[in-house]
Length: 171
Image 1 (cartoon, helix red, strand yellow):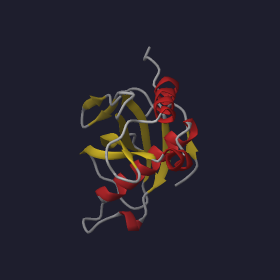
Image 2 (tube, one colour; image 1 turned 60 degrees about the vertical axis):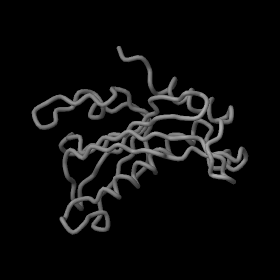
Image 3 (cartoon, rainbow, N blue to C red; image 1 turned 90 degrees about the vertical axis):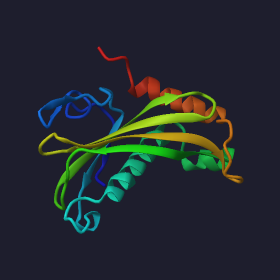
Image 4 (cartoon, helix red, strand yellow; image 1 turned 60 degrees about the horizontal axis):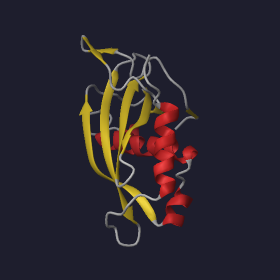
């Protein structure tokens, strides 16, 4: 993965034309990473396998949340973690080895108690086409038991900071 950038990119979430219709997957971008597609990311059909998209989304979510106070060290210190329990993905186009993609993510919701939601958008850099979009739902768990557990204040604060800093009210 190439160096990450934290800013808005006009190609992401701002009414991108896909298959003759306008996409608007959030209009708020928190972080994007440029990702090169390599042969190991492709499957027998010759296009990027969905497991590669999921891996890139996980990497982007860590890159996004760590700067606002949720490093793995904080997870270990509190004994808690946010575990994904549902991911809804729409694959809208394909990519191939040699393509460069932009993987964007932002937090869309946090209840301050147990759950949060995060959105993703993957865009083909050269064409600006949205190839995938997804929403992941997370629940806070206790690292020792694996059971649902109330979010520590550090998690609530980090989520709220991420939402406030990177999800401003659209103009």
